[in-house]
Length: 289
Image (cartoon, rainbow, N blue to C red):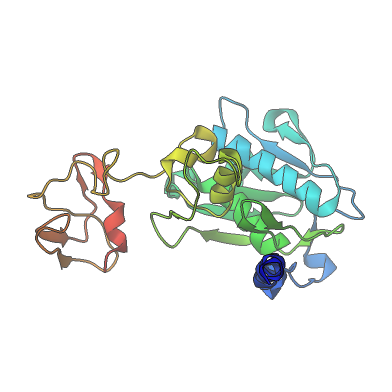
């Protein structure tokens, strides 16, 4: 009987994961009329390159985003998308990062938040850009999710639909994550590489647009991590039991009372104006209700 239970466990796990890998959200988008498409590949052949700025005009996160895009487009289409520098390329391109091409079609980088992305098509080009440090990374993953059906379910389970004739509709979208701070604690111990490596887990996090977890993400190519509090503390940085906390919320002024003896034992004031405590933005308090 014990042997039967051992055999059943993998089967149950696979059945539980099947809906995640096979739901409709992971399927490629519905076909659109040919005249409305930007055709990135046909029969596993592409005329597109992934275009990025050089090391002086681009960031490590933007160059990593270009590598991720080329890698997954090859898995999807079977075609090789070379990565080229903007000042050395002419032809149809997928422009990644704060490129001259993006600026030329009216993208104002100064208006974009740190994690805000822009997806836009022109007659022949696709623009994937965003604010710094993480906006362009999220533009690439937003594109792969919404236009190609990619999903990263776990660090070692991904859904990458095959589409040898990848075509996308006209795009002009702008967005950002719904929460300022996004972190999961569903990971093994930092010093336990038995299940998967630190690199695999870090890529899983950034592909799903987590920005918390400095042990994993605090690198230039990932756009660094958002941290709150001193090392070893779950209290906002620089905060004491007599501090008054304040930050920006779209709802306007609110007050939050915290029970004495439980972390911060005083009233928290949240006015509509942006503020910070000792130079550390208290974005975590945007999640309080």
